[in-house]
Amino acid sequence: MKIICIGRNYLPHIKELQNEVPREPVIFMKPKTAIANLGFPVYYPKFTEELHYEAEVVIRICKNGARITEANARNYFKEWTIGLDLTARDLQTKLKKNGLPWEISKSFDNSAILGDFVPVPFDKLHDTNFELYQNEERVQLGNTKDMIFSIEKIIAYVSQFFTLQMGDLIFTGTPEGVGMVLPYDEFDGRLDGKTLLKVTIN
Image 1 (cartoon, rainbow, N blue to C red):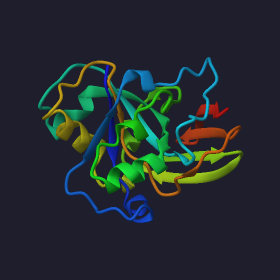
Image 2 (spheres, rainbow, N blue to C red):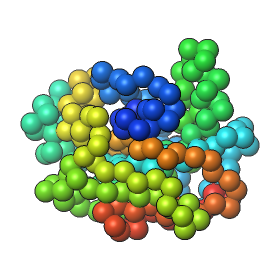
Image 3 (cartoon, rainbow, N blue to C red):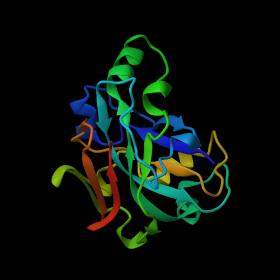
């Protein structure tokens, strides 16, 4: 099982981190050990002093495929949720400055927190809100219509390089409003108005 993540897919988020607008999807990956088991506490990692939350729509691949066309991409997913891509921003900044890969800042244990999966309403695929609340205050609001690269385009692009397999996850990018996580923060992630994710960072 692979966890494929898309960076820089919302213009306001690109601007808030002062990055360049990509011409093609920016891809990085997490190992399956990054998935947090919410039956156990999720701890603030000791190797960072600048842990950031990034709320994202996450899809789950439902059948195997390679070199998938954009027109056929909807046949490869049926469920989605809201997830958190936790980022050690201080480590990432240092790595980017030195032209090095991001993995240790993005792919560490418990860096992928998933909500409950629900069926995708395909009639609203390109116009669905998602929100993240931190200690009951809304900190992120996004809409799938604002993606630079749609979910179909992401699937078509990624599958040129990696065979997609049943159970693979794709994090589709975060909107503006990313910010600091502090110990004992409580997060509530909502997709289409429904709470699908609840987690406390210990």
